[in-house]
Each structure stands twice: as C-alpha cells, then as structure tokens.
Length: 448
Image (tube, rainbow, N blue to C red):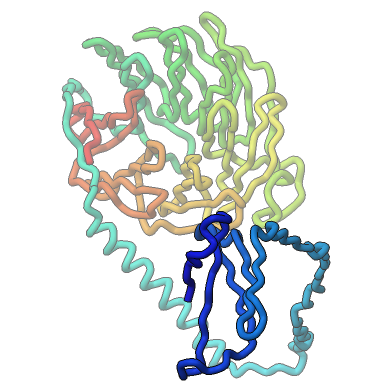
C-alpha cells in the first residue's frame, strides 16, 4: 500500500510510508525490504525505483533511476547445402526365345489322289457359280443402258444385197459396204459402196466384194476388196485403183498418221502408203512370216511361209495386228517391225484394244478377253456373227436379233434390246449408228 507522507511537504519531496503489522497493535515491527517501481505509461519504461526498508531501520529511497538499455546479440547465419542423389528406377529385362523356322521338304510327301480330285472339283464348281452369279448380277443391275432414237434415214435399195459393215466419220458421213462377208474361195461376186452425206446418197460399184473401208481427210473414202484391190473414191467417182499391193483379201485399213495408211491382208504383207491428192503411194512393205509367230502357236521356223493377217487395231500411238492363227503383235509404224505379245490358240477374226488388253472374236464367234500379259485368256460367254464395235469400256455386238452391250470393267451385260440390226458403229459424239433389216439407218443416244 502506498501512502503520501504529510511531514515532508516543505522539502518538496514525496515520502512513502509503509506500516506493517504482524496482526497485533503495538507489536514490534519486523525488519524487511520493499522495492517499488513506477512506470510512466504502458510502454514499460521505468520512471522511479524505490528501495524501502521497514522495521528498525529507516526507509531508503532511490529517485529517478536511469533508463534501462537492452542489447541483443544476433547469432551468425549458417547456410547448409543439402543435396540428394537421384534414385535410379528399377529396370527389368527379358529375352524371348528366338523363333526357329523349320523348313519341311516335299520329298516323301504323299497326297491321296482323292484329295486332289476333290480340290479340282471344288475349283470347277466355284468357277461355275461365279458365272451364274455374274449373270444374276447383270439382271439385277439397276443402272442399265437403254437406246433412245434420235433420227432415222431410209435407204432406198433397188437390189437387195447382203450388208457387210457400216462406218461413220467426224463430219457426219455414213458409209455402207454391200456384198458377201465371208468367202471360202476366190470372190466372184460384185459389191457396192453407199455414202450418205447431208441428205444425199452416193453409190459406187465394184467387181468384187468390198471388205474394208476408211475415211480420208479430204472427204475421200478408201475401200479395199476381197481380191486385194484398194480404191480411192470421192462421192460417186473412183479416183485411183491399186495395181498389185495385195494378192489376197484385205483385212485391215488403219491410219498411223495424218497421211500414212497401213493396210493388212491374208497374204501376210504389211504395206505403208502415203496419201496423195488423187492416189496412194506405197512407201514400205514387210512380210510377216511363220518365224514371227509366238512360240505357243509356232509349228515351224520357216521364214518363207507368210502368216495371214486378219485384223488391225489400236491408235496412232500404238498399233496391233493379229493373225488367223491367233497371234497378236505390237507393230512399230516407223519400220513395220512386229513384236509378239501373245496368242489365242482358237484363232482370231476380230480384234479390239481396250484398257484391260484386247477383245477378240474367234472364227466361231466366241468373244474373249486377252489380257495385256498375252497369256491370260478370259471367255466372256457371249457370241456374235457380225462386226462389233467398242465405246470406251462398252463392247457392243449383235447376236440373234439382239444388240448387247457388255461392260468390260464389270464383266456384265448392261444393254440388251431386241433390235434387227445388221451393222453398228459409234459416231464422233459417242452415239450409236445402226442399219436394220429394212435398210433404215438410225441414230441412237445411250441413256442410263
């Protein structure tokens, strides 16, 4: 307990009296000390310190104690570098056993004959089923091609003659050959050429049956006959007749350039002629002999006996010729050299080039596909006895009063209509031009 001493007011000092009793009045005071500390405010800065004694001695006092000074010592900063090593991941390795291939020898291996016969019968059955389903697919084909008539021209004939072929050119001309298509011996018939152009008909008579014709650049028509003659005609006039180019029936006429004409015949001669204003001039001739035949159809190595040529096809970049024995050659128009490609043992009568190879018609009228390798031959199960034509991948032919279109890519019949056509051709617009048994010339457009 703090009390103010009244007796010290004159000295201006403050005394603090402390009375301590041991619980009884008048008891002897005990000796002791009391220390008091006064703080000026709450910042804990000491203002006064008192040292008090009580009991027998007097009370001592300390005024205005000096301020305290607090010092601190900062411990030096110690840096520690701590590092760790990367723990290596566990790895497990394994090794597979090396595969050992065991080669078996066919020696001593015996196959039961019944197994071989069963395999052969199965393959034959699969081939037969493929043909059957191929015909079924053709019947179920949704996008069939039909013929839409465009125009019809009536050909007035005073004398009925067999019709051989029909051709068209880029200017719209239509040419028809009349006569006998096949001869077993020397031709003793007469023939005729009929040309239709811009509403007019032009007719030329020949002393033998015509076999081939081709249009020339200057409105001429070149006609070859069964006796080996070649004629250059214009409208209804014969401008030029060959002397002795071929001595047997001419089987092919093909332009290899704008002025060079290739002619083939059963005499085995390949003749390259140059077209003049009013004539043809032979500039090169080569004989195809038995020695040129592929080995598969060659029966001797004679370089004297000629191989009769029956067909020529291709374009100005590639020319192909075929023989009556079924051989097919690639012809070089520059030197008329031939390189064998392949052969059909059943023979060739008509030949057409296509993307798959060649379409050939045998003397019996069977239509086949000879692949580009010259070895693979595929029967298309179709027949014709009239000259056929081709339009891209569509092969068109006549059989028993029907016109049939065969898609060579799909191996399917996509056109079949009852038409009494005698001859057909494709014009420059891709339309069909046909002549029927009434000698009416009609143009048809293909529609899907």
